Length: 376
Image (tube, rainbow, N blue to C red; front, side, top):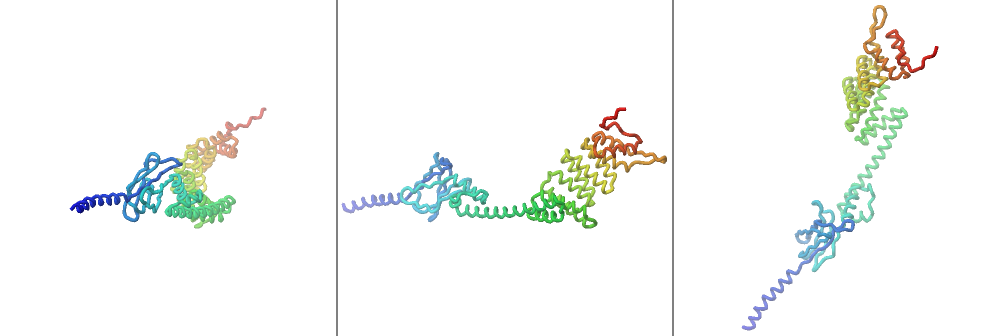
């Protein structure tokens, strides 16, 4: 009986001892998160067991260190999570009895890898940075690098073609300019300057064509200017050029509207835009339209001497002749020539303006001459 009592007393103690051994079969993970050699606080460390399902986490302390005890023995992946994404990970960490080797996460290195992966070789990263990339980062880096190399090749072809087109345009070789600028627009359809210059060449070629060829060339120019405006809608000069091309293609009202819009967008050059419209109207035989455009040019820019001269010239055709042969100029005709002489008494059209005043009034205008009178 005494022996049995001893056995009964030993058994619970042995079970307690075995239980203590069982609960001791755990380990821990420790490490640190730094940036530029300084520990970073409150970084989230995710600990995932891979041999048996299990997930744990811990945050770094003031000096960037972290420690998680009581982890079942096994194999783990330890990751650093920022904004919900794992930015770095150490896989296959073996947890045995006691404390594992410290795991180090360097935010400076991580950011360098991310930058390199995104740049695709825009700035060549150090070899050690590339070597330290995760498979995902390496894949992203190589994809970006390939894309960048393709873009560089494309840019070279674009620049070479565009430059050939611009040189031919400068030299007046319009057919070669058209060919190269059209090709450049196909290589990159997002450059307003390409379409604007292409349209300039198409307009210039339109001036040299006749019949259907002329109409088609100006139609193409309109389409190219419209594309340039689509890409850069705040360029008043594009609206001016579009308006001129539309008028030459026969779309007069649309052209006038776009020239007016150019003047509204760029008041400083509004006089020039209306002057251009007047010139087109003169060339198309639309005297009333020319008079209206030149008047607007002088209203927008009261010091635009050439606009006054062209206004006077356009209004000459509206003069009436009496039965006695005397001429009655349209109101404002003489005043337009006089204003030109006031602004440019020695201008290239001064002799012509003086002659027109004499023809229309029979009087010689001397008030605006700045040449000294000869002494008697």
